[in-house]
Length: 179
Image (cartoon, rainbow, N blue to C red; front, side):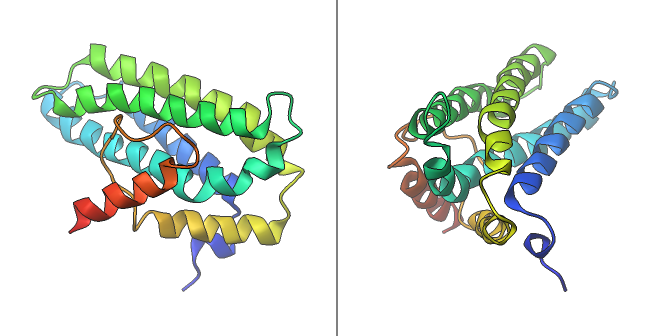
């Protein structure tokens, strides 16, 4: 069996997950029945939270050095990305804690998410296209996939915004939840 990382690099893997998040939101708009919408939104929350945690464990720490010559600087870009993850997780947590899913709260979470995805794709993903060779992209994709076994599927806005502490926080919280 072929692992996803053997055929897709980290940048395309992340973009494919971003596409899924966007597509799923578009699907929500077509669902009239709240009873059908609620479990699907809760699965989406878990997917979005897990994606962000995997980025903080296995992507951001590894690519910061390749972004050092970008206009905003690698450390600033990564720090900003983690800050946006925490802001998004505040909205995701509110949404997850609702007994009845409301469109108002979905829209708040989606607004934060879309802003973050657009910035990440423009400021981080695209500049990395010319800086990460295929071998490294494949290695990072495998590490990203592996991070999914460690990371939490729940939003944790209380975790560190510090790029040096966030990976360890993510692993500790994820492993504690899996015990």
